Image (cartoon, rainbow, N blue to C red; front, side):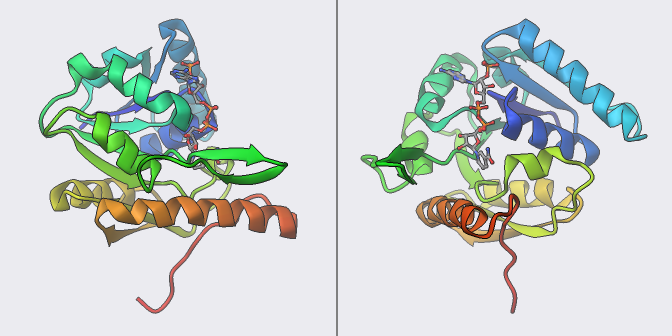
Length: 223
Ligand SMILES: NC(=O)c1ccc[n+]([C@@H]2O[C@H](COP(=O)([O-])OP(=O)(O)OC[C@H]3O[C@@H](n4cnc5c(N)ncnc54)[C@H](OP(=O)(O)O)[C@@H]3O)[C@@H](O)[C@H]2O)c1
């Protein structure tokens, strides 16, 4: 099963590509610019080679070609561009495909970090509305810092929360995430939980700032 990462050339996309590739998945990162995607993919393959792993299967293509080629598509562009990006890929989105939304709609207002006000309660519920019928949206990885994903010397050692309105789509993403070393996936139910996850991301960033750390994240006890 090939996993695509739309807008995958930024820190979050690169980190996801590295960890998913280490977990054994073939990955294609997407960009608006296919040369940029191919270059980034080559850099990620070199990094994994330096780590001494087996040859990594990471490619790079223009975003809509990624949508065509993959059954699971992560969306790793900034939230404000994510709907437009999905719309540009629309002709290639199909029944049963799973879109994993990692976006967090952050903005600075009066020097304070906060969530954007949206017509829907969360970024994920907003993006779910722009998808063609039958394409399944799951929200996940929102609370995991990109630089932690990218730094392969660091243990992830945390939970990744997975929500969505399709039980089967949640099950498949939990299964994918469970193959990433150090990550414990937790199914937290329907897509309306995404609003809480987006707030938890804001809290984690504020914890980082207050306590002068970089990688705070969540682990649930008592399960
Ligand atoms: N950074 C974190 O710690 C973190 C943690 C959890 C979730 N997230 C979420 O992950 C997503 C990516 O974060 P990031 O820091 O990696 O973002 P980023 O570097 O700002 O952007 C990622 C990629 O999005 C593409 N992009 C930019 N503008 C675009 C546009 N107008 N249309 C289409 N694509 C565009 C760019 O790729 P090309 O120029 O190659 O097309 C860019 O490399 C965000 O939604 C963020 O909220 C981030």
